[in-house]
Image (cartoon, rainbow, N blue to C red):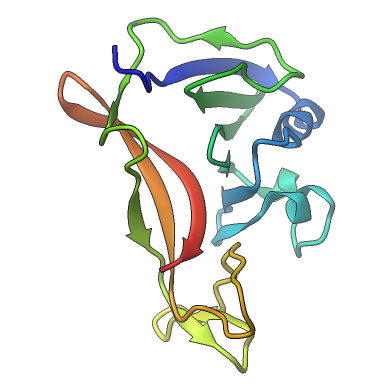
Length: 178
């Protein structure tokens, strides 16, 4: 087992109110969410505090993520199914978690070596957001930068995990300027 073994926890039949409590964990900062009609990437507190044009209950699935924790969720007929991914500490309070069976997953690449995934779009000053001509709407990305000039492009930093040499999971870490 490497020094960065990933621990996986599951919870099922979770009501919306408990999902919201889990997502308020201070280790989670951003979210990726899916609706039938579109996808979103944004600041998790804005979603939970009703500052977006849709609410948590409108998302079919999503990920709340930060450097130390990711919580994934899927809506089902009997509530939400949650998965917590972390290397240290405990999963968020508020639900009954069970740890996944099997050995911990070993981190790839080695500790401290995340890799970026390019996000679509370049910063458009007129829109005040990142935009891509092939996508018919602005793409707000949850990123902060120093200075008065926004970065032209941003990346999503991720951490891969492997089992028996194959990548089996990719955990979102943060969004930052390229």
